[in-house]
Length: 67
Image 1 (cartoon, rainbow, N blue to C red):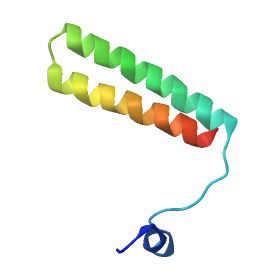
Image 2 (tube, rainbow, N blue to C red; image 1 turned 180 degrees about the vertical axis):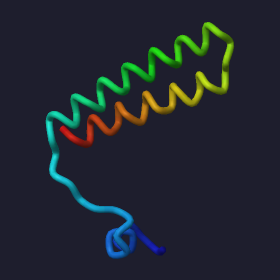
Image 3 (cartoon, one colour; image 1 turned 120 degrees about the horizontal axis):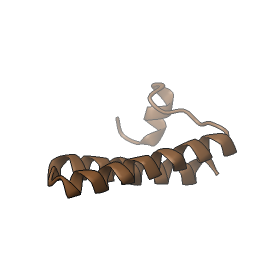
């Protein structure tokens, strides 16, 4: 793959219309993952905390894409 257009041509990416409900769902998931990260930190499960924090950031970013 040379560029993003190749990804669209190969069907690896597709454009979608923004949806408010999907944004709301992503934001709720981000909050849940952030809560999970906090619990993992308290339990000193650091790798799990990092993974949960990553997912919180991911869903927060996805929320911005949908809106």
